[in-house]
View (cartoon, rainbow, N blue to C red):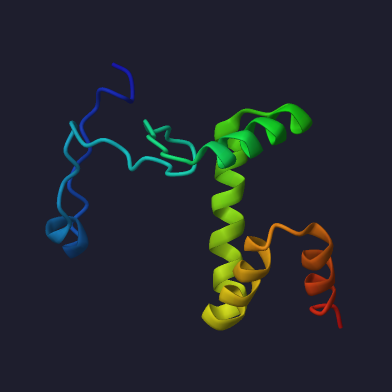
Length: 109
């Protein structure tokens, strides 16, 4: 008889008595970074043009570019705080790369 088929005997510990048994139909928790979901993203035509331009330059999937953008937005917001983040967003909304470059230079020590 193999070791896999031998039932485990009670070892006499209180922990084993009070610990809930694992159900066979339990599914492992999904890894949220790997699990794919269906996404519906409504964007303006201008944003679509920018995505197509980035896709052409970077040669990556649009979903990867969008995920990078969301991560950048999220962590900048956490790192800068609400006030500084809103200032940065107003600089980005000007859609002037030179102004944005000068604005970001101010963050250097």
